[in-house]
Image 1 (spheres, rainbow, N blue to C red):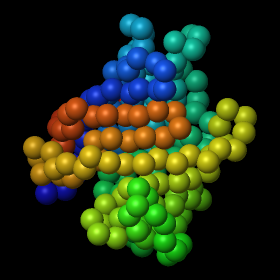
Image 2 (image 1 turned 60 degrees about the horizontal axis):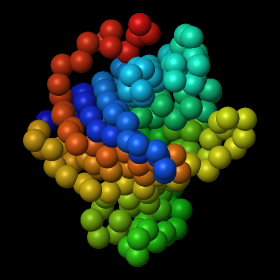
Image 3 (image 1 turned 120 degrees about the vertical axis):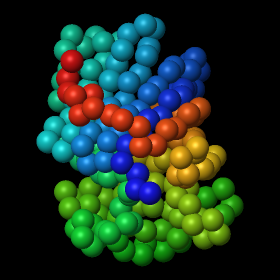
Image 4 (image 1 turned 45 degrees about the vertical axis):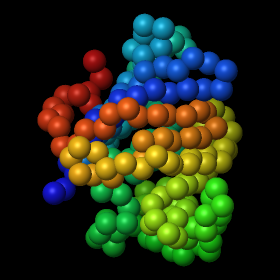
Length: 194
């Protein structure tokens, strides 16, 4: 069975703040939408193969605004629900060995993955479980270059038989998914600005 859509719901927590509800909807190579409910306001980020938008009324936005170029490039990579390692040559993705890494005491293989749009991500893959436990990349956001490191954990097979990491952590905070559904019906209109 091939993964065509994913719907994830859970919470996002930043240090010193209460958790907020988050919903992520993805359709393979069509779109990604992240909805975040903050103090009763609906904030969202949309990415399609042609553009990316962010709308954060909690930060004073009156209307959606285009994503910064690096954020859009990063989002484009996430539209591939199958990941960069499946059929990478056909997709024009370059993968190189980049040494080894240690994550939480585990030895990992480090792979440098370059997408056709030039976006580079280093993947640390646990040498025993073969699961992705960390990614790192460099992006230009908020007026400066920033190293973005994300760790992944609590891998589980969902009810549909697909493996997902249910916890993601980076400098901004931690996302914990409570429910992940695969191959649910998602209308393409879900990825349009409303």
